Image (cartoon, rainbow, N blue to C red; front, side, top):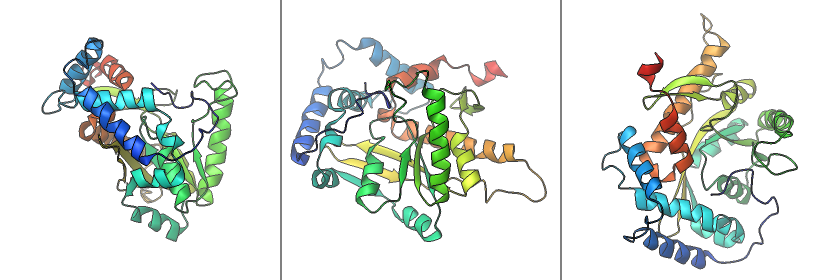
Amino acid sequence: MKRVGAHNHAAPERRGGAGDFRRACEVLASSCRAPDAWDDLREERELIARWAGEIGLPGGDSFAPASLFRARLSFDWGHALEALDDASFSAVVSVKDTGRLDRARAEGRGIVFATMAGLFTETLPRWLALNGGAGQLIVGLHAGKTGGWFTPERPLSLAGELKHAQAMLRNGGHVHMMVDGYHGARGIGVDFLGRLRAFQPTFAELAARTGALIIPVVSGVTPEGEVRISLLPELASPIAMRDPQGGTSAEWIAAIVGQAANFVAYGWQTRPEAVKWGHMRRFLALPRVEAAA
């Protein structure tokens, strides 16, 4: 599977092929619905079924073919969307509820796009760039000179990125951050679908310092090769939540982190096929809330 920050840093050669991309998706999706599609992936099929039951999905793992489609698309076709030329890219990618962008631009405010790990980390930034977007930064996309996600250079690299992100947001720019990562030392623990899970507060802190909006983003791809991105209602801004009668900065940040956790839970339950199998395993290894109490 493609790991954000671990792929080749060189930009792919861009060429036409919207039709080819769509046909490839159709063939791949069809193969994932075949009876023998899971013959060599029995552990993964059991994982998906267990995870689905854990988070209360109706119909169990009925989404399994779509999950396999997403996994194989990521593994076999990870650069296919990036490689499309601009016209072909625009033909297969659509973004819903762009009025949220217009509001931020009208107010001169930056945007923190709260995303989840998946196929489309670079898709919304490219769409924005093609449609008159402001300056952008994807935090954590490229780690350091070695290209790996966890390297000796990573802490210094991340500190520099966050400083850059803060300046960009203050100037009305866009910063993209994954809010569903498991790594980091300052996580705030929440009840997440019955498990105790820590979410990192960095995205909320950036918004609090800069007055940026926080807009959650969900994405999907159809078996016909249509990539659809939705911009959800913004999370309550820490700036707007200030209470002159009491409350602390830590409480504001914790409230936003709780909203982000709810957003991730919503994404998992409405688009389970988009959840990476590794994230399913990590979730099932977390302590249950009642056991941690």
